[in-house]
Amino acid sequence: MISAFANTMKVPELRSRILFTLAMIVIVRLGVHLPLPGVDVQALNDFMAKTAQEGDSPWGALGAILTIFSGGGLQQCGIFALGIMPYISASIMTQLMGAVLPSWQKMMREEGGRQKMTKYTRILAIIIAIIQGYFLTQTLRNPSTIGLNANDLVMNPGFIFTITTIFIIVTGTMFLMWIGDQITERGVGNGVSLIISVNIIHALPGAFSIAWKTCVMKGTEVNPLGSLGMVALILFMVLVVALVVIVSQAQRRIPVQYAKRVVGRKMYGGQSTYIPIKVNMSGVMPI
Image 1 (cartoon, rainbow, N blue to C red):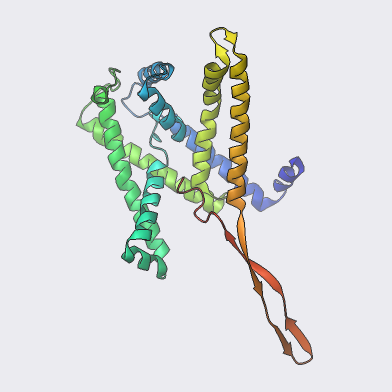
Image 2: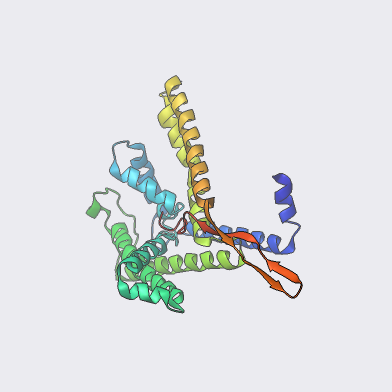
C-alpha cells in the first residue's frame, strides 16, 4: 500500500491532482477558523463547551452534531458556518422533485436537462443558505429566543450586522460549492463528499475524547465494562465503514454477448463482456 501511494506521486498528473486537492482542503479549513465580523467567538465557545458538558442538555447534543457536519465552522462562527449542507439539502430536494414531478422527469430526459437541474440546484442552495443564514444571524443577536442563556455574542447588533453576516455566510457556502466543483474536475474527484469527510475527520479527536470520558472513565477510575464497550464501539465503527465501502463499490454486472460475423476469410466478434451497474447509483449525496 505504501509503495502504491509512493508511485502516485511519481505520475505528474496524479501528483498535481493530489496537491491541488490538498491545497483546496487547506483553504476549507482556513475558512472555518475565520470568524464572522462583530461576533465574540470566545463567548460562544465558552457557552458551547458548557452545554456540551451537560449530559441532559438538548442544545449540547445539537451543537455537537452541527459542529461535526460544519467542521467546527458553527462553533467558531466562521465564514463557512453553514458548510456545504445547503447544497446537500438542495440536491436532495431537486432529486425528489425529479422523481415526483412529471415536468422535472421530462427535463431530466431531455438533452441538457442535467445542466438545467444543476442550475436549479445551485439557485435553491442559495435560497436555503439565505434562510439558514438569516435564522443563524437572529440567533446570534438574540440567543434567548431558542432558550440559550448566552449574552453579548454580538458586539454591535443591528440591521448592518444582519445584512453583512448573511452576505458573508451565503458567499462562504457558494465558495465551498465552487471548491467542491474544482476538486471534482481538477482534483481527485467527489469534491462535495470530500469536504464533508474532512469536516467529520476534523471532529473525530474531540468525539473520541468525549467517548473516552463517557464510557471508560468513572470519575478518576477506569471502568472495565466501559473499556469493553469502547472496544466494541470501535469494532462496530470499523464494521460499518467496511459495509459502506462494500455497498459503494458493489456492481450488478449484466452480461453482454457480441455475435460473430465473418468478413471475407476473417471472423470477428464473438466476445463476451458485461455492463457494470453500481448498486448504489446515487452515491453519498442522499446521506
